Image (tube, rainbow, N blue to C red; front, side, top):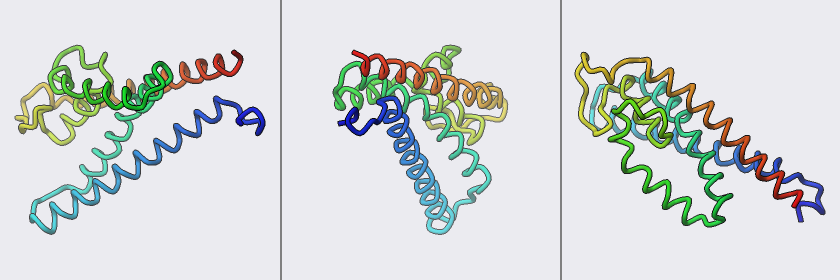
Length: 168
């Protein structure tokens, strides 16, 4: 059908990526608004709108590698269930890996590590002391750059795989 309509498979992949990224952004925005409203007006907590906005933006960028990796996993196995299962399984060690020097090699923990200095919460859910090394803003910058780089590289690989499939 795609050939008959003269739609290139790699353009379809890019369009699917765009839709998933838009959905991710929408969910993060709606969740953040909900958290802010409930926390501020229902629970009467002091919540910084600036921190909510920064955290939401960082969550969005930090999630991009998982989007690209999910498409990659689907290309390998052609099973949606495996994509969900692999992402679910790789989420478990994230809190442990995020506090080690190896966090940069595990995209599933980027969000946890990026958010540590922003919201001052340990990946295990406890509050961080100001003197904690996890409050270093360096991890935010490294994590954001890594997220974009991993997303671009894996998406490029996905496009090459899609082109190869189209010529086969």
